Amino acid sequence: MRTDAVRGHLDGLLLAVLEPGPLHGYAIIAAVQQRSGGALELRTGTIYPALQRLERLGLLKSSWDSVGERRRRCYELTEAGRRSLAHERNAWQEFTTAIGSVLYPSAPSTPSTGLAT
Image 1: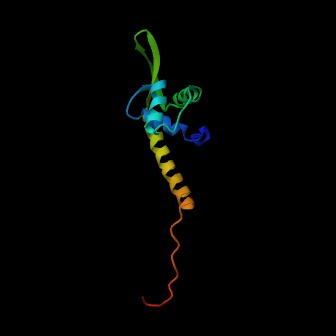
Image 2 (image 1 turned 30 degrees about the vertical axis):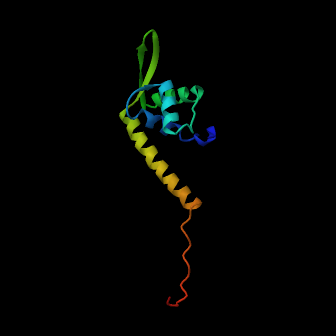
């Protein structure tokens, strides 16, 4: 799937994969890829700036986690992030309903001829 298709929806995707609990950057990328059945492949150069922006906005908080000698930053939702995710989901539902109405209009009704069948 084209990267352009994700544009405008990245925040919602990141918030959604963090809903169950904290994850580090690579695990976030893997979760999006797994949940999308491999259709969405996010790059580190895309998600890390977005995660930092979401943290600055107060939607995420981060902490350092050590695994062996490696340190990695883990991100998790704040209450504001949970509210934002609910808003993103509502906006997505409205968007897909509107687009679906255009792409898949209901079958046109046939005018009644007044004849009994």
